[in-house]
Length: 172
Image (cartoon, rainbow, N blue to C red; front, side, top):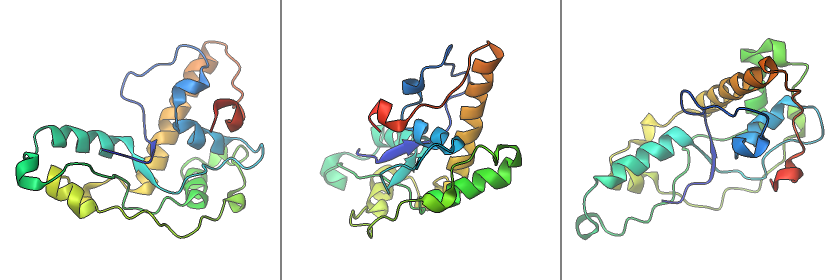
């Protein structure tokens, strides 16, 4: 299985006891939407919701043998457009209290046309996970933000100061 940039909420009960931004992994990109400092958009176009990727991996464990379905090397990505300007607008609509923190949605990078061909029908044939069952981009973004805000509230409640670091500090 080969997924692209992964986003999504943390598992229930997930904790990061003190500010450790590297523990946010690629969700740091989404968290960075909550800062006005510079252009804070991912440098990738293709994304996937971690819940979809996890489900595909689990289903692959019990899928038919390669002898009947062919080689099981699969590219995985969301069938939904991961438009980062839309993501910021989703957040602003769902959380009006965050509008003063949000990055300027109009600074979203323009990507060249998608050249990576991902055959999600093949993923379905091998794993049984139907394309229409994937989380939407809006669900992914809002569930991720809600999860990140819960982590942030936890840090603040413990007296930590939260300052979202530059993406470059984490190799992103």
